[in-house]
Amino acid sequence: MLKSKKILLDTNFLLIPGQFGVDIFEELKKSFGDEIELEVLENSLKELEKVAKTAKGADKDAIKLALALIKNINIIKTDKNNHVDDIIVDMADRWFAVCTQDIGLRKRLETIGKKVIILRQKKYLQIRG
Image (cartoon, rainbow, N blue to C red):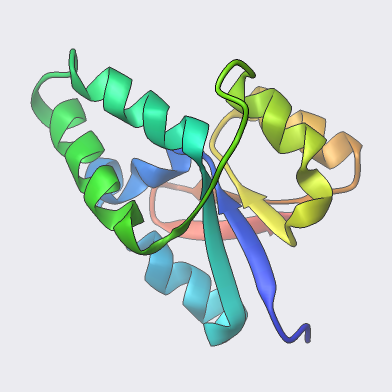
């Protein structure tokens, strides 16, 4: 087992606690122990803040919860002009795994041999790759 595992949380993955009531942080600890280091891209934070302005109802609540939860996560500064998925693929070697629900991103990461963590059946996490 590695001493420390850096895991990136993609924007859509941060919405899982508010959308499905799954404690992604506890589930990641169960799977990988306390040695994980969670990270999120600055661009993901900006995406959430932008969408929060127009979101309504349950979506707005999920975004608010996501923004509150990432206060304790390491935020990686990124080029504001680049698309989040492209940044993730370009920086993939930085992380042990990437947590995402984005099928296109997942396939891109799996193609380059990167581990991907997804939510299955709206209740548990699965590592792929």
